[in-house]
Length: 132
Image 1 (spheres, helix red, strand yellow):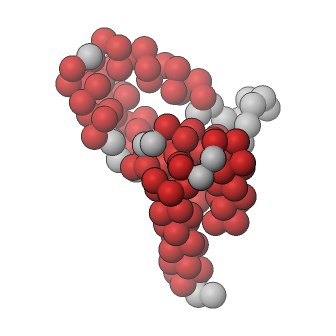
Image 2: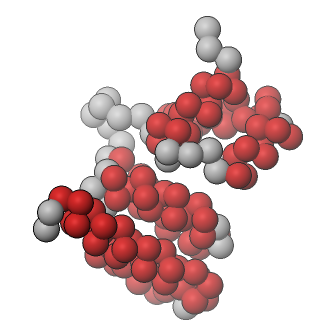
């Protein structure tokens, strides 16, 4: 049986391509809680059972929640994962407009716009790599 901490780190590497610093700190300071956190996160990230949201939508929701919560590093992490799953810059921009509508311009001004800028940059890089 794999060590639960190693298993959790592997889950982050698979889903985000990195172990974010807040997660590293959670592992260091509350490893028992991290084990439970991973179980919940794995449930959210389940795929192929015919229920729930597709991965692209799950990542977009995390982007939105992180922007509203002021966690712009987290938003960019989920943005990158979402774009690998097919999320587009236009979809991110549309979601950000909904954030402004529901929460005002503050989340946009504090960093939501940067997430949209990053989405455009990633999209351009992906097109360039694809040759178009």
